[in-house]
Length: 336
Image 1 (cartoon, one colour):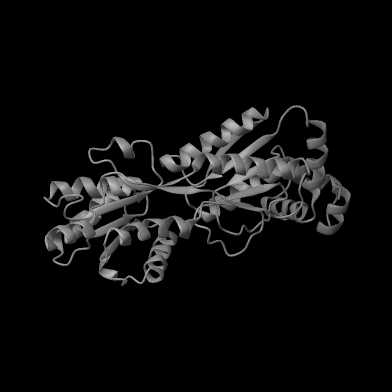
Image 2 (tube, helix red, strand yellow):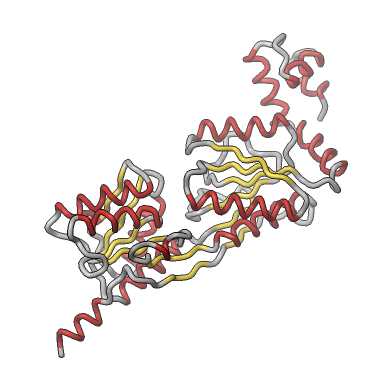
């Protein structure tokens, strides 16, 4: 595919195509957008990228990481791991933030394709894009609930991680289990409900707290609702550790002891979970492994070692600390 063929499809002159692709203001925005879309659809940038990869093979690749935010410890740690792995291979990383905005996400992907300077993309988005990337792409699919696999995927075992937490709470004798999440953790809430059902534990919607706030504030708000309720869960799963921290802080301030009155378990095992005033029981997802495998799969595509779609599920483990009470032990002690 070359500019002459694009001109034929767009029914314009080759010079108009050249100006549109170079960003010239001589071409109207609407026509320039149409020409760019044709160029992407017809694979014009694919050929240019292939030639650049072969030419720059020894210089190292430029990898774009497209993530929703850099406030979260979870995302920051994985991005750092990706950067470390790419630099080990002599490459560089550019980070783009889409703020959980699907329109902005598509704009970023389109910009990356049009600039044609990037050799591979690692993205946290599970959404199917309006423009299918012609650049090798790996999705870090945190909750493993994408509609279909359109590129290589590294999953963090969304349901399995949640089920590990619920299974542990069940072993500790808890039957009244709640969930605290926020607007971006609806997938984990669905996994929570599924895990309760699979463990034959009743789902009580009154024990599900989903906040418009995020991080510690989401847990803080949920604690207020729990304090005001006469019917309280004996244990709560937080969608991630920061929520658990806010929840524990406010519960204790209101005189609800963790874990004596309510047990709390988190997910991710962020670095200060073990240094909290009450060290947090949580499920650790192997974040470093996510970064390593994402880079490996991406380079397999860049260097043409693999043409098949691949999927890798990273490991996890339960980290038992001090925020979950064993109700079975308490019941046995009372029977004596």
